[in-house]
Length: 355
Image (cartoon, rainbow, N blue to C red; front, side, top):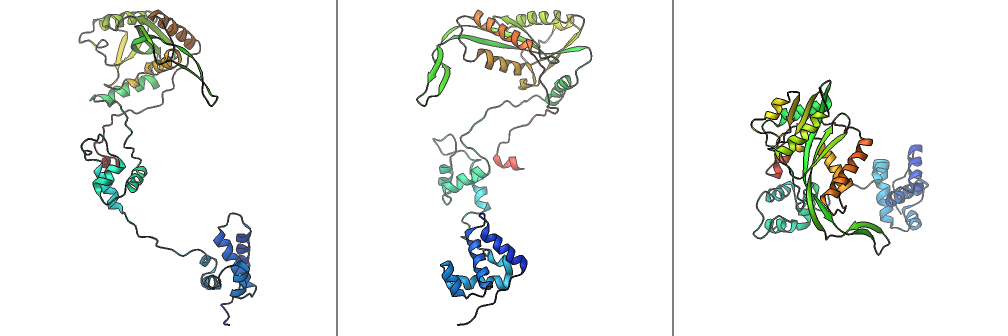
């Protein structure tokens, strides 16, 4: 019987191979090959090692030869080209390009199956794979407002400057109204689910008892809020509320941040002429999120109005007043951190997002 290539191990190789056989994290195939080499280094034949490890002698001979030529690196699997790729980068570009076309008649949006059917030579599974890799979700839709104001950047910079570096000895206020707050009466209570979970909720049926309109002025420096209740949202109600606000800060410059509602900015504002110490600053068109009082309105809705039951607008106003008092007792200013605001338009095609 011909003798195989002799195996001589250095101290480093022996230590590494023994570690492979003892480690629980070593792949089984590598641990088996390490045992082969250690046994061969003891002078055993291929047949003896194969019998001990319950494998074929041809496998032992293969790894003996590989180790003799390449050392420990030779015990790793050689590169395998594998199955030829069925789809290439061109296929991916075709899939993305299809999304720029209108979907077939009768469909509002594309699906992975429709894209595969249109291409004809691409599977639906691969279409979904490409869409996931590009984070494209065909069925998800989001809505947003994009400012079309040509003066968006300067107006936004003006407001951000008031938040981050307000004028000395002046009061900065964010003013807006929340119209049409409904007084909804509906049943409320607890519900026990079959799995034992207890949920608080309310019935989907309700009775309307009218609406009320809330005006609010938020002090940017303190987070304190001053409110006013009205039945309508006209210019006269806005000015009535502003008179109350101005009276609360006598002999002080007041900078008021407002949105572009027509009741806030008439062509000839005689009220501003009578109050030269009041300065109006308007948010860009479709960018009322820059007005901090909108944040407070969201907090009010979630903590005092959502899911509550009211039998009259008066109860709504009383609930709002109670919340305002509790809020003002522990009020703190919002920490404005966004320093740069610039308009950004929609991309009409997905390919443009990568350019």
